[in-house]
Length: 329
Image (cartoon, rainbow, N blue to C red; front, side, top):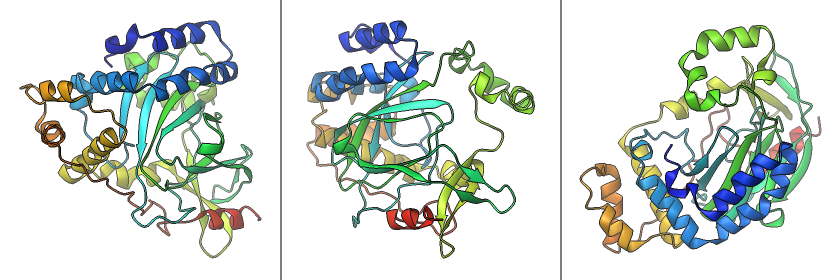
């Protein structure tokens, strides 16, 4: 990751200092909210974020898939990850249509600033989830129902299941992830050690039940959804749930991701036309990006793309009403 572009920026320096002096992760997430709000309200800072990505060969060379939420990196350390995520609207919007399965982020805490667009509706669930490993029938309860515009920034705690509903309009969030506590193993994420030897090492860690101590996912992680007809929740293994979207790659998906990102940049006034004029002339710029940047330079309006509504679960889609009905049982 190329952090140098923003390393000396006052917002990043303020965030780094606060993180260093606030070891309690919940206190850090609460006290850093004003910084996140300042970042999201500062057009010039956000334009620097765009440059930070388009000047990064690693970002330009990545392979997009439907598994990726279209994003921009902001800053990353061993202790936190700061990003922008972009969420498309539904082509025929109806309130309460689920964007994905109910899930948690293991030992990661997530604070989100909805800085652009309509924002989305969301549910949080109690951490006490009961799943029968044979039938996969699951009991869980709703703990909070909110819209981002009414709780911003919002926090999703570690191990806290939650669901996002498709926003009414194209939206973007500035978000920060941290582990729920500092661990001596946190630095391994950035040196790639766990990734390089993940199969044998993870199996040893999981065999001894040390996942939480090290900060990795359990051997079997579930996502959840309300089952049609029987008014209960069902679990699906995360690997099975994500398999179709991880496999969805290629030119069509690349262009879908690019159109979403560049439509967002136009609508959010994050196009620095002088920079884009210089960028499109670079011989190192991949053809995929050159195509879309040239459209921007030419003054073309980039039409937004819409959420792909089929989910990787048996009934393909579900609603807020389905969730609330299942939560009664």
